[in-house]
Image 1 (cartoon, rainbow, N blue to C red):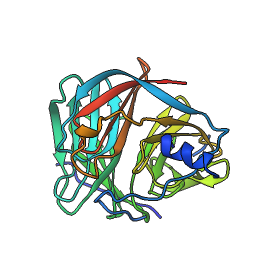
Image 2: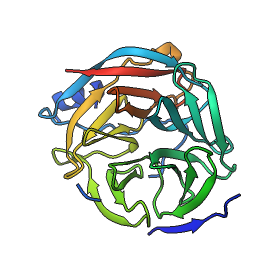
Image 3: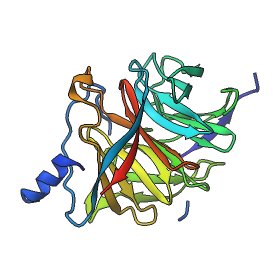
Image 4: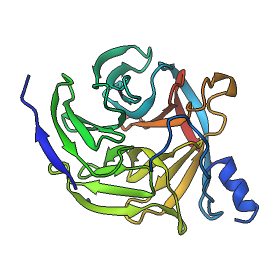
Length: 274
C-alpha cells in the first residue's frame, strides 16, 4: 500500500547455453554481488547483440542504481548507505553539475523524470522521494510495502520493480497500484528485474547480476527480446564483484541508447543489432 507525505517548501551467453543443455494501463539480495541462479531463455525469443557507438567518462566511485537522459544531460541515482545521491551529470565529461545527498539511513535506488519532478526509490526503507527537477528541492515522499529497485514511466503510469518478476503500475498522483504484470519468458518467470527504462512502447530492464537486458511487453509481461551485453566492460576494468551492469537511459529525440553499471568507469552509447 502507498501513502504520500508533503514537505514544506524550504539472458546473453549463459542463458542461451543453459537452453541448449536442456532447458496499456496503468528479494532481498546482498550488496556483495554473490552470484544468483540464472534463468533459462526460450529459443523462440530473439537475442540481440550490440555495437559500441561511443563511450563517456563515468564516476567509478558511484554505485549506479538509476539512469535517465533528458535535455542533453544525465540524471543518475546512486546507492549504498552513507553514499546515496541524486545527480545531474554532463554526458560528455562526466562532470557533476548538481547533487542531492540522501541521509545516511537510505540506500538510493532507481529514478525517473516525470514532468517537472524526479522520483527516486530507496531499497529497504519503504520510502521514495520526489524532487523538483530543476532545483533538486525535496518536495515530498511516498511509502510502499515492497523493496524499491527500478522505476520508469509510460507517460501515464509509473512502473516499478522490486527485485522479483513483478512490475507494478502506479498512479503518479496517489502512488496507488493500478495493475501489475509478472514478467516471463514463454512462461518461465524472469526475476531480479532491476533498473528500468520505457523505450518506444516497451520496458527495458537490467536483470541483476547478468549482462542481459530484457525487453518486456507492458501489456502481457512477456519478454519479446533479450540484449546480450557480454564483453561491454572489459574484465580488467572490473574492480569488485558488485561491478554489475545497471543503468539504461534513452535519448528519445536522437534515438540514442546509453548503458552503464555500478562502479563502472564508462557510460556507453550502444546500437542494438541482430
